[in-house]
Length: 167
Image (cartoon, rainbow, N blue to C red; front, side, top):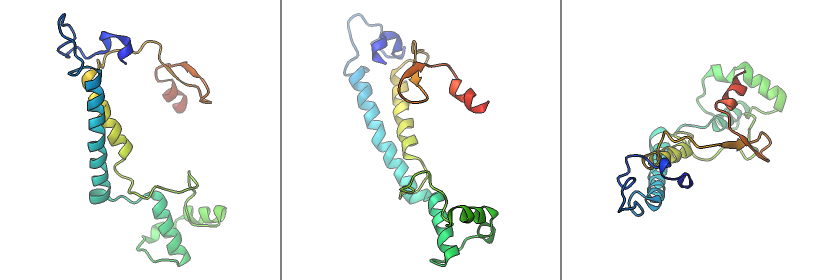
């Protein structure tokens, strides 16, 4: 962002229009990088505190494992009969020969609770810091995005990804 010049800096930065002072250690690039990195760790600590000590949300893959264990007699969990008698379970068993839910990744799910998302907490905190240093109205000239095969860059068209998905 800094390569675009002073118009990318938040107009409220006090040194922006000064003829005698430059924001380097204060309100400069090192300051922005420092604040972004300082925000990241507390955000992750807060998310993990919430994951383990407050919400403890079971992941869908782990619940699928409980259903499988219950229906195969490997364990006994208090699962509502509507779930156990679901037509979807019969279809999954018919197709895969197991009650385990099909996995997007062969290695299965992470071993930590699902909520809140640590990545979202991390990004939210760091973006908040970036917004304090950079002009949110600045439009990046000639932005690009990865092509559908990921091998090249193509010009970014506003909402193009969204509209292709909806249509």
